Length: 102
Image (cartoon, rainbow, N blue to C red; front, side, top):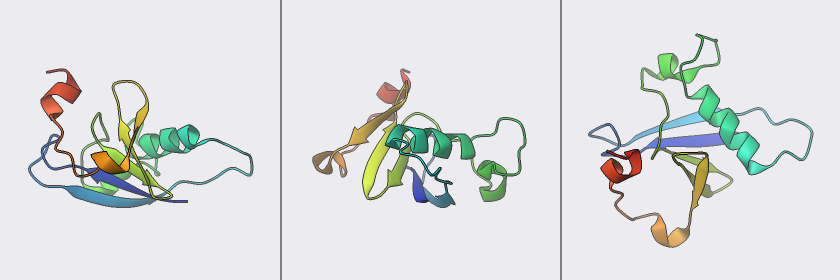
């Protein structure tokens, strides 16, 4: 499954960054949260596995405030888990200091 990862401008960086990754689907009825967790794992440095994308993309790991887009739905990494971003929120400016708890 194609997943777009967005690192918004102002969330630990001066420019927006977008990455396209592939998340393997299992032949089960896994829910969206399982796919989001798998995308999050792919976009983080953990143990140097070949599938980890930060080294390939020369970027930081995915963190709170970053966004995953799956099947046209936008999901923001929250302090714990993910939060769906609804249509009316997509152009909203986020206070990333607040999101990170700074």
